[in-house]
Length: 376
Image 1 (cartoon, rainbow, N blue to C red):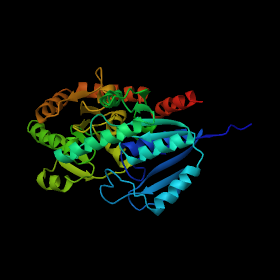
Image 2 (image 1 turned 90 degrees about the horizontal axis):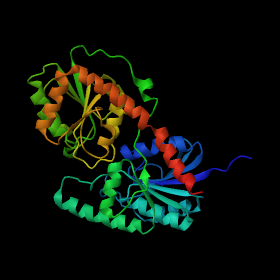
Image 3 (image 1 turned 30 degrees about the vertical axis):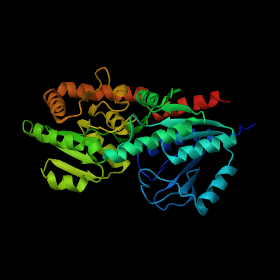
Image 4 (image 1 turned 90 degrees about the vertical axis):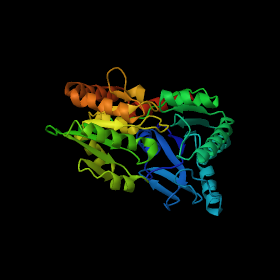
């Protein structure tokens, strides 16, 4: 007799085609889980997508939001369309509710639905500090709002999990004791799919992949690169990503060895990692576990990164270099690698092996499924 599939409802602030670490995390996990579970996604409609559709066997509900801040903090617009979609959601058979992050209104809705359905509620957290938008006043009120939503969702007695141990430590700030870790991860086949031998000759390629915002440390990297270039004429910097600072940086940094690539798709990102010697993640942002570090590391890039989120859980014991959040130390770390090619090559191999052995989507999905099975 064929086993009846249980249904997992994921409540996300955003979902693909919106691009971001949480969206990618969700899409990769459900890609594996959908073999054994029915999957429903409840998210926000931040860009006039269909309000209800099916994507590769996954049913997706997109709830209307107000236009204000819809790309950062989407506020649900509880109009007629919202009520009709909510009625359809309530008709769904749901066995488990998983909410990604604490601080979106979709997570509160997921908690409400879990109570109505009398099913288990799981919160997966992806941050290690309060979210910042670079404005002290707005950040202050943003932190108050985050505490408000977190306290509200705690009343539903969910189980909390972080995408890194650092996330779980941050949850203590809200008097939350996490039940475990569902790590951010990488495809275990990605290296075989994209890797190809590339001879850069004497040239050393340094790259950055991420949003072009101050909080991601892009200014520190550009200034450090200019300093390092004074003693190493054979280096080039490739910057992949989009953001509000991009146009200004293009005008300010016109050196021919600095390449602004703009927004890249996944295949282009991986191809950039293939030709990269040193990947720099100079973030000052409240990361969970940076996807770009996993992508670069698995493709055998030597990684230099700040101690944000779960970075040290990947980079430890001679696997990469941790850098302080300033230009001076970044210059020092880059100089060290450029002057020690053997060490750089050793780090490339070490981080690749560590990620393949510990941070794959199969391992994360298996950990999630184990927790779900324990509830039966």
